[in-house]
Image (cartoon, rainbow, N blue to C red; front, side, top):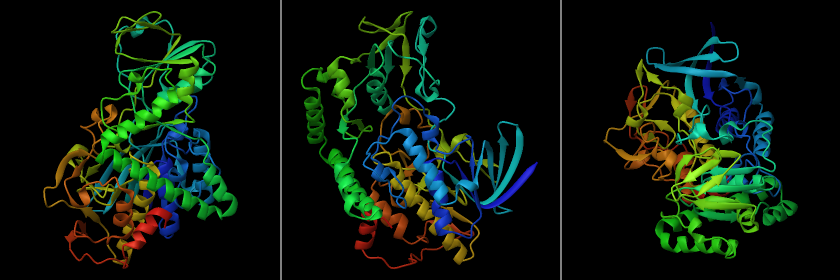
Length: 509
């Protein structure tokens, strides 16, 4: 059986794993590391999803890495462009050579006696069993199950004579030209699929159980393009990034502080886009803005498809599938040749790995998170988990920077082990994904670690605050146990004032 040892093992070669590896290469150049990736390609989400129109739902100037500018004017990039950006970033930083593809980690056990993680894995194509050991493990697997998306069992599915296609398992070459299509769902996937497929389908219907807040966003940022023409690429990127971070934060905060005002704003924008041609009942959620994710509509394409009649929208509940399509509770039947259940994700932590500490399983729902980067009671392990209210990568970047700071701190002080310890009974009820009540989050409450009620155990979901916490606050803050000992020295590695974290948050490190 093959055995390999590394100072750091990163699990996952998606946008988080490649970002973590690049930061590690830049900030901890003496560390040996590898990336274990189950798939045969890097890119994670952007390699997995192949449905028509797949794109980001965050602007690329904040979704891009803080150390590598996203160039061009595209705001909402398509999946292949994002995958290429990740691949080029890996190549430019030399981390593409550190990836071991086709390897599924099946077991991870921390040994206090040996002060290392012992990982068991399998090379999926051949079945070869592998073993790895590492002083520090970083989970960069995202938060959902790559093997299967969420799809409720609908009554009468076997009666349907057409095709049922889940977006997470899109078949290559699916022919939908001239066919009647029903997309079940109202999230980002459905909002992307409907206008894209409408161009070729005979007709496409978006069937939703409840509406979602929508916001049109131009696909090209003309201001960013203008800045790129007159400024160096990095400076233009930082300025555009700072503007977008500030705008997103203001929108989120106003939604929380004055939801009625923001509801009127969002619905007013949608009403203008529809031009009175579609009933607003399909776009008026019964929850406040940002209780669930806000969905962006590229160039208003969904609204254009609905107004032109190429697409339609129905708000109703499904009674059952029929031979010809879907029978609704209202009695209406939607005929379809293809039904696409864009019904969401199945959440899964650490790619399904159930970590153990000295043989005892770590039950995630019983644990709280430390700075959204580590898990209470779990030694020498980090977890890159991005934002859900703004671009994922904003948090992934500064979380990776924090873990590099931590590793360098441990090296300077000749420390072997670090464990976050909660001695104040800080456990709260909100999960790592905050107070969002989206269906996929509510379904996974029994699998997600919790936030605490205060201190480093509570997530801020505020990029400006997190930059200060992760990039500048002292590593030894009294909540970490180093080699079995705790202190409350609170001494920072470097002095920082208020302006430096603020400037760093907006313009990068």
